[in-house]
Each structure stands twice: as structure tokens, then as C-alpha cells.
Image (cartoon, one colour):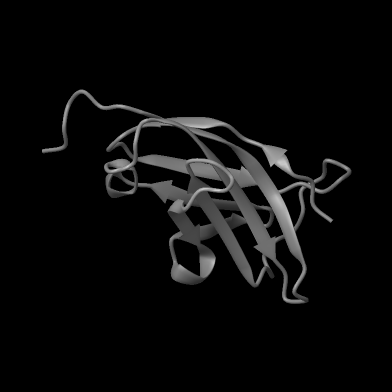
Length: 118
């Protein structure tokens, strides 16, 4: 079973950011996720709000980066239209056995941009 990690991060509207996540088990050891059926990361204004950004392994917007690592890229189009402020995010892994593990939660702070995209 995995351990839920808290990861808070910040991005300016219209910027690029690579988010790298290492999945660990309850013993704080790296957990092999190479055989995951699905990995999903979503962000919303709050835990009950509509999803504003989503990245998924099955859609090719989230990638495996090693035995216990996955990553995704936030791109300008992901944050351009989202209001600045604090947002909630979480990631989960679904195994081939159908087990669901929330492996990361936290705050995504989106800062306003002064310089607009060209």
C-alpha cells in the first residue's frame, strides 16, 4: 500500500512546470508503479469544485519516469484561463487489480502574470 504525500507547488499563469512525484509505501520506501493501470492527477479550485486541469497516463499527458516515479508537465494553456489563487490537487494510482491509492495531495498556487504570452 502507498503512503499519501503532501506536495505543494506554485506556478505563474502561462508558465511551464514539470511536476515530478516519487511514490513511497508506508515504510517510506520507493513503491514500484510500473504496472499501474492508470495514474491520474487533477486540480480544482477546492476539493468539491469542478476539475480545472487533469493529466492522465492513459491520455499521454502523464508519464512514468522510473520504477517509483511519474511526472507531468503544466503548460501555458493549462493555467492561462484559471483564476490566480490557491487550488487543491491530488493524484491517484489505479492498479490492474482495481485498487485505488491516493498518492499525493496538496495546494497548487497559481500566481497572476504581469507579462502576457506573445
